[in-house]
Structure formats: C-alpha cells, structure tokens
Image (cartoon, rainbow, N blue to C red):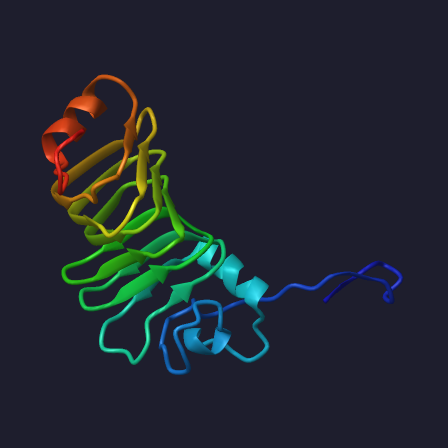
Length: 193
C-alpha cells in the first residue's frame, strides 16, 4: 500500500503477480472461475481478466475440463494446444494473437470472435460471428454449424485451406483481393442461390 506524506492516507495498493494464469480445469469448465486457473484464492475475477490482457495464456491438453466463456473476455495472446479446446458460448472473445495447434479446437456456439493480430487456427467450429481486424490469420479447417458471418477488415489477411460453410453463411469482405480469395477458398454445402 502506498501512503500520502501524512502516513495515514492511502493513495494506492499495488499487487504483484508472480505467476500467470494457467488453466488446470480442476473444478469445472467455467472460464472465469479463478480456481480453474491455479491462482491464489485472493485473486478475483476482475484481476483474472486483467491478467488475460497482459500475458500469453496457454491451454494444455489432457485436462478434465476446458474453458467455456459466456461473457466478454480479452486476451493479449491465447494458445490452445493440440488436444485442448476453448468455447465461446456467449459474449465476445477478443484476441491480439490466437494460436490453435494440431487437434486443438476453437468453438463458437453463440459467442463472437474478434482477432486483431497474427493468428493460426487449426480447427475452428464457427457458430456465430467472426471478425478479423488486422494481421494475418491462417485457418486450416473451418466448419460452420449454422448461420454465421465472417468479416475481414481492410489491412487484414485471411487464408483458409479447408472450409465447410453452412447453407446460409454470409462472408463479408472488402473489395478486390479479399473477394477473390474468398471465392477461391471457401466452399459452401450448397451452391449460391
């Protein structure tokens, strides 16, 4: 705690975190439960969310539960290891950098994803909205399970090698190269009407 020169008035309290959050999934799949992140009991949800914004967060495989986020969450850098998963069921997951490796999976079942930096996603099950606002995003396998949308902003690059888009999936892009890339690399379950 920092005090004013009078020695009585508190100016601020400084907390130092010597560890970053590491998902252990020991209690449940609730992404905001501090106990699932191996942090001390004194850490609250607001502090956890701030730690997400300033650290690289790695989700390892072989755990009993994987995080499900039901409200807005922002990550500086999120890595989903092969065999692990993360689900956004409501709200929005915002990531500066996102890496989903090998058999790792990113699921959206009603939640949104916004990516602003360089990202590599091996398996994306998109059930709602996705925005790519900057950087280069490479998606190896994109599947849509219902109506959803993908928006690619000017200055962002997206490469999709295997995609299976739902019947009514709109894709919005800027004109030019993004339109051509989308037309050549995205495959719909039914042809355009």
